Amino acid sequence: MKQSFTHAMAWLHTWLGLVLGFVLMAAFFFGALSVFDREIDRWAIPETRFDPQPMPSFDTLLQPVYAQLKPHPEDMAATQERVIGALPPPETLPMASLWAYTTHRDPVLRIGAEFDVPNKLKDEADEHAHVHGWATIDPRTGKFLVDDKLKIGSDWFYPMHYSLNWSWLTLGYWLVGLAGFAMLVALVSGVVMHRKIFRELFTFRPWKRTQRSALDLHNLTGVVAMPFHFFFAFTGLVIFAGSLYFPVGHTLLKPLHKQHEVLEAEHTGLPHEPAGIAAPLASVDAMVAEAKRRWAARDMPGEVGFLKIEHLGDANGYVSLYRAGSDQVALVGQAIHFKASSGEVLREEPPPSPVGSINEFLTGLHLQHFEHWTLRWLYVLGGLLGCICIATGFIFFVEKRKRKHAETGSQGSRIVDGLAVSCVTGMLIATIGMLVMNRLLPAEMTGKGEWEKLGFWAFWLLALGHALVRSGPVAQARMNPAWREQCLATAALALAAVSLNWLSTGDHLLKTMLSSPYWAVAGVDLSLLVTTGLALWSARKLAQRRQLTVAPMKAEVAHG
Image (cartoon, rainbow, N blue to C red):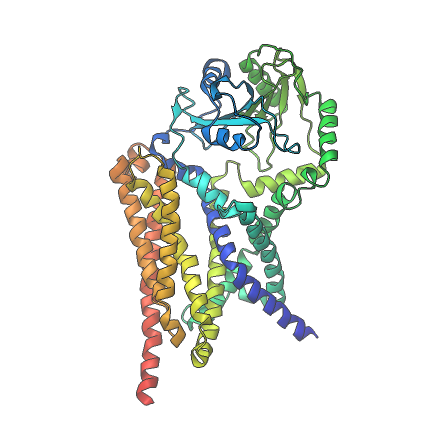
């Protein structure tokens, strides 16, 4: 009975890992890149390469900026599909609310607003009668920055790790969620399979056959990073549980959810609806000063990270100020809310309940908005260990079966190996190729971001095609040369990205590390150079491994 249970766990571990491992590979790899998403943004958009800035003065700098902010054309078009009749001209729509957001790693400031529309909605269940506007500004001057440039780190790599950038019917979110659940199952079944788990923690024999060394490395990385893998798979599911996977508050329990919002507004003193009476806006800077004084009195001095004004220009308007909170792991804002027309404090958020504290801590630990660079690099290491664990699982699967498949004429190992190549080295080629395109395309090019996205998928499809075409030797129980060839391509692209950054901006490593230190850009360039070295080393080792496997096969043919 015990033996059959172990076999069942082994079967579950193998096939869950094989079917959903490709998704998990993307989740781990782009999750690791997301740890430094803002730094990648700085590399990709050279005009934003200046020091991080605190939230600027609202009264003197931001208020005139919001006077210039208009509804975004894309959201105007989307809203037009949901309302009856033609929308009024965007410059005539009144601003109903606004927000501004920054972090300790952001030199630029993201701002946005909601504009009321007079049109009736086509769907009565649709409660969102607003048009959104958004922009990115230089917080030192209030100047609007060109916002059609793709923020490769925060707007592409970051959402890739939880949605695969596949928004149609939210299928990408669901697929990553399913893979995350499978990861938890694979971890448990892996522990059941490996009874000598502590011995495997110290066992790695790189000189053995590929099958043996791949299994050793698979077990080693799986055991070492097991707490990391379990925690991030679990908390990722928790973060999306209420908003996406089980949104009962917006579906089955929607009436109760709406009533809860009304009762909560009465309890907190924060108006749920506008009063319909015009009122001026008091000094927001004075509210910021009071919020900072109160935070300091609670022994947690800090800057404003998020500013929001609801019911703008209305007697029920209020200003919410959230502390940046980058000095702690828990994702908390310690919000203080003010009456917009007078600056009177309406509510100071109390400490969360024990359950709320746990939720904030787990969410903060997953999203890592805190200031701790060593821990950030440990996150990257954990994500890359996850990638190695999955990649070696693919290699072990192929190596264990390819000789038998060659004897029976099966193409199974060849297909899996081709997909594995495209998922491992192909994903690197797509990622670095996108950075190369970012530096090659003219900065003023219209729709540059869309071309970068197309380039990402084109590089990945080319890598997939190359891996499958070159996988013929696998069907003869030999090594796929695509592994080595794509390692060489990765090295070439990474070196090209560093060189093109130097040529197009003048920001070479001697400058960004020594004369005018700017570690966001230097860190990306150094990471690309390390990738170049590792890719070349891997290509050399693969060539040596291929020679070791070819020699015995030649001997067999000679004796035969």
